Image (cartoon, rainbow, N blue to C red):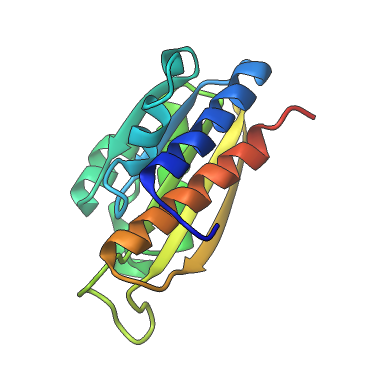
Length: 170
């Protein structure tokens, strides 16, 4: 994408909604560094209440634990910006919302907070999907360039594209 803005994300979100609707899926989000941008894009789509259930904005570690059931020991072991936490967030959102698919995002949008091991722009994504107790979970990593707004937009785009790819009827 050459020009990434919120309107572009909303058009992508509409495609996610169509795919979820065709599969009979409902979805939830668990967002940290994006602060609800994925949910905002999804709910900008008319009729999104047919396939979007809820969004969890869990900025603090305490919120990730309380609302999504992320084991507090993970934060000490691997940090909040990690594949383990991203996966746990996605699984927790899916379970707590009772939906077929959930996406999670945790990262460092900047301008501060980065380290040599986890620089600004580091983002981990988790995706959990399935029916009943059959849960599939994956993680993805990205290192985005740009300022805080740009990192958040790019993370939102990746989350929406991953949701679309997963929800496409087979």
